[in-house]
Length: 62
Image (cartoon, rainbow, N blue to C red; front, top):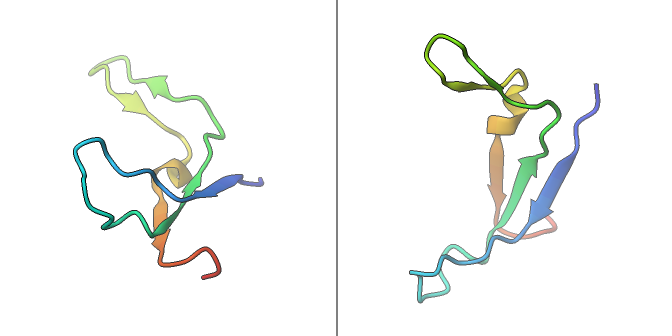
């Protein structure tokens, strides 16, 4: 099973005026399976836990 990931530099929020936390790079895994709705409680469930992983890096090279 292969996984696809996206590496990007996040944009700053609309309420953020400084340049803090926008120099970092972020790695997020793409959705590999559709999320399902748990019938009893109505919660959204996922079968692939890689969707929950996000990593931050100080530069693109690292």
